[in-house]
Image (cartoon, rainbow over all chains, first blue to last red; front, side):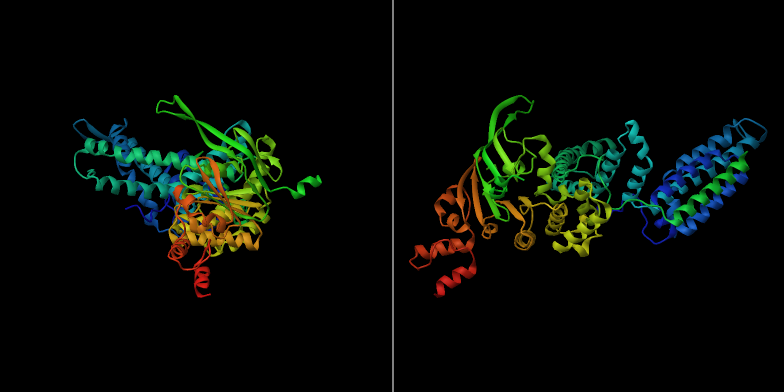
Length: 264
Length: 288
């Protein structure tokens, strides 16, 4: 049932984008999100769209994967577009009863559609081309300075990577519990939403108990291996920038500047 | 270092008592439970020691005292001459005594084999290139180098435990405590782990403390301690221990099949000597 689950949505292949330092990709995604929000003209969106097409092309990830993420928020997009289309005041060009479409409405609806599409497919590139452990390392490194003001960056990163390691284990465990409870006559398949949700309790309770036990075991094992938090720790695979990462930063700066120039 | 240290035992527990408070479901204390009662053992460097005992005999509690995960309520635990109760010694003790636990899944931290082996050295603040060397070396010793880029989830139980042992070896300890490390494994996995532990003892001269309830795993030990209800009730070489069948039965510990057979043959009037441990020994005894 849960075997061979892919973590996050990492797509394994070889490309420049996969080899890039996770920090570049994180900064890039962050900048891209900002530019997409700043864009307010069709021209700017065309530039943002072209940039995204270029990135998808060099990522060697099939474009269909990129747009998978869009399916999940299809309803959100449809509603946003519909509301903007019908409810924006301005020059009316079509009217039926209380519904009316305005010139401004069309413009805003199109911009919203483009914005959401670019946003979702743009951010999914990050998770498609970066392994979860690289992503955590990158986050830890980028947010490192906040450690000085008391943000537990290392601890959060450690928690994230441990969580990632335990997802498949807990999945397997859930599967086992479901089978065990089914063997004792539990029914997870029939009934309405409420009964089904209620029937999940015999799965959740043992799962939680076991997760706590695992957590306590793991804490002991980490202590036995001299873990004392982030201070004084070295890294087996420290992140370091290559030439291609510098080039990527240059491209990002150029892109951001272009968007800013077009917008203002 | 003061010369007195040279003749000292590597591990020394002096009349260790460990008590904890048992609580009921509301968290009210019910009674004080004594998990270790007057335990004194000593282990020399390079020895292969086995600690045998049934569930609840206190053997795992004792194991956790050996690398400062638990501290004695009374008495003393000395590791390499250092008292585990003294705070600055904690990390030094943990560097010297590595631990492998029962459940392979609950002690692997990395999502890639080599990252997990690197976890210990990272904590010790070893420079990056040396971590790499240590990780490769440890994985080669445990014969897991080919799996260094695999996810631990895809390995068998025996392989996972070998990764866990490699993770400990990479910290360059002087002693490894295997705290029921074979209890959750299938026979093949148990063999793998025992073989690895023996090789480390033979080749690297590592002190091994094997905690188990499988009698057939202790036949290679230099010295065996048998525990029951928090006390050390028997101690000696495997041969000495295994020749006392009645006492072992009273402790609900079963002899290995070969030793049992030898004892039965002896009772049937066939002249075989006491304390036979392996099939080969029995065969020799019967032929001669």
